[in-house]
Image 1 (cartoon, chains in turn brown, purple):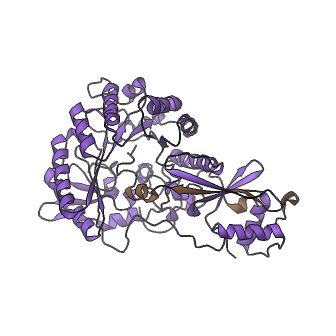
Image 2 (tube, one colour):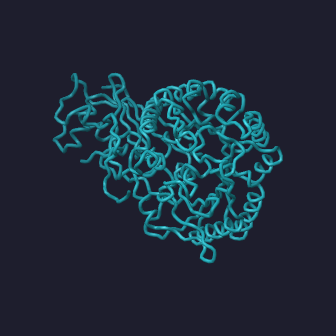
Image 3 (cartoon, chains in turn yellow, purple):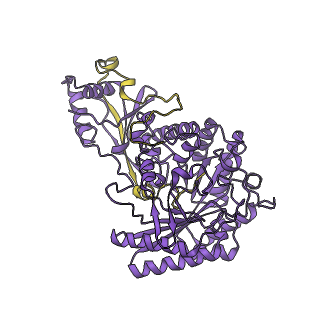
Length: 65
Length: 456
């Protein structure tokens, strides 16, 4: 058990593919004649994200299950 | 021109949601914009029309093109020797409850940690903190048993830790995890001496008393609710921590409503039961992941997201990390028999996983000694080393999930139980969709929406 190689997980799962290339191809033309467009961009602001990150799950903010 | 690597796509009707976790940015865009991005990534010639040119410029401004993409920092200092600046004590394996699913099967032994060894642990972390100029030392008390059964130990250790903190000018931050069966005097003492408490309670009276009976078989609900009310009266910072079983999963919205409205809990953490320890042969007690996800989404809808946090350890959109938790980093937990474990879920030397998670021990005359080879193995379990996480939208948030649960399944590097993996993915997707609509989902997370003029 161990090593730093890239590890293949033993349990196979049907994980969805979220990659850009799974939805469009690079040589695809503009879809339905639509010009590229972004409706909205959302910026996420997180209060003290490092706190929980540094504390890990079991340093008080979370308890194990 | 280069597109960032960490970009995940969710279909959303005729539109698409693009999630760039490392840039803390979400876009809602049309298919033609996706095509444009794919061309950029493939290094093909780009269209020169006005709209394409405009969006390339905007995406550059948003940091999605031609931008350095910094990976989240590890929780370790890989070039330095192990020198923890926080410590958690597992004061006893004894327990006054007999929870049906207890991971530690606690209460079957009655081992207690010596206060002198705990003080040696405090000396070590405060010395490290002073050398590293850390401003705060976390001192935790948690499981393997009910920590506050070792009451004299807790009082002595807190007093000693506070003395060190005062002498060195470092803040001591005391936290605990408890089953909540505490006397009024002890609960009030905790509100005066700790900074944070996690209280385990599984729901309404019927659920709590079925899941978490006292060792004599009586229910524990009334005592735990009494403790919660003491926390509220003192204005103390705490969270409720709820294990969800196949029997309680359908009740999640009702439990959430009860906790937030009746008990006034500011934070509610739901975790799906994992069949190990006392219930390792009762796999049917674990909730179906789809039911858990459905119940959790409904639970989110019950609370005011600006006031109440509803959490699950694998749903952490606010956290960016290459590892799931400190068990794979710098955790320094001292067990009742003076071993050092990186995870509270492995607290007995008889546990087969002790060979992996026990990273040191205390020896009289030598102090704490650490097993660097074991730490190396644990530290290698980063999400970058888990191939199946490579394209997952939850990658930088759940970071491969709980290593102990994976090890229970037979391989430290296996997925952290398929059920939890599915839950992490689907709840992260749900959060990204919520945030894409500009809606808040937690008091901790703010969203700022940028809208552009209608299409020209």
